[in-house]
Image (tube, helix red, strand yellow):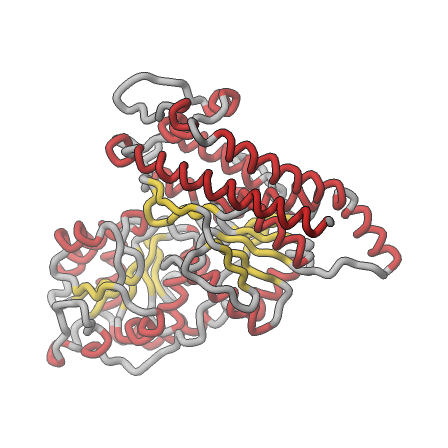
Length: 501
């Protein structure tokens, strides 16, 4: 009878969700976000979401009247949504309460089992993330982690929401109930999962802890599970949202401070935090955020074993099916600068023209090759037409690209780690980057690359290195040696220990 009851409640919930998200999709389609987002500001976002008055008061937002207001007609927007939304929430709340009532003494049980040395709950984690299939650094890093989890048969399962991926060993895929993009963050689709389905998966597989690595919808699901099942939840921070808000969304100082308060409140809901560079740990444990140092851990990424030096062949490496430019054999000895990654403003790519032209003032035959795609590609091509644009390059083809270039330039101040830095160095390619966050934890200045403070300094370092070929071999050896210190065995063992496995 209990099984039948649960089965039919789930069926009712699923049907209500279909009605809810079908109506919600139609209503969102009626809102012209593009024209109404004349200025992206935290005030506008808060007003659009129509947050409760106490939260608006905490953030410092005030209702305003004017052309920049983007609040839809809330009563009209909610018309037709109230019944399926409230009923679905009641069913979800009932499941939450049932789980909570059965598990609220879990800490006591765990302590008891530890003292008698028996009856311990099996250790198994559910790792939730909003990005796994997307072509970005976070998803690539998570895919590498998943491969290692599979290979080592570690007690961790990824849970992702996708309409394209299929479930695999240590990977559970659920279909989204709804999918859309936000006008101020188009590069990352928002996928809404069925929370009741996630609840059932957690219960069925008997997990005893949670790891989460994105602040989106799956972050909300992680906190729901944490409190429903009274389990620890740890957060893996991939993105520096304060820098993103400042450099990409153009938030002013007041909006940045509000964002920081929201992040502090959100991260405080988790038991432990994992970061990818020492600067981020200092920020989180400093006065601005106030986290306990013992609950903040510095971890790292590693690169796929395919990233190793290959025989140089600029003619073949810098040719591409989708580019009009091919490096001819007679030009293969020209000094070659490489940028590989997303072509977007937060990656600092719009500084590449200034950097390149400053270098070319001294080294006349220097070339620059750009691998990747992104929203700023057309603008960059207009300002830097001399570059060779390879478009999207498959991950498996990148080692040949790195091995054939002479220096890699990363003008980003946004990267929390810099997987591309480690990839390049693993292939013996020195990197010039800004002296910030992740890259400065990887690059040893003047040994396997250079750290700079300004675009002019990046150009100066590139000129210096490209003009002294006698130092290339030592830099390459040092780059490879440093990259090998980012070892998957050590990083994973430290990560598992920090997660109490």
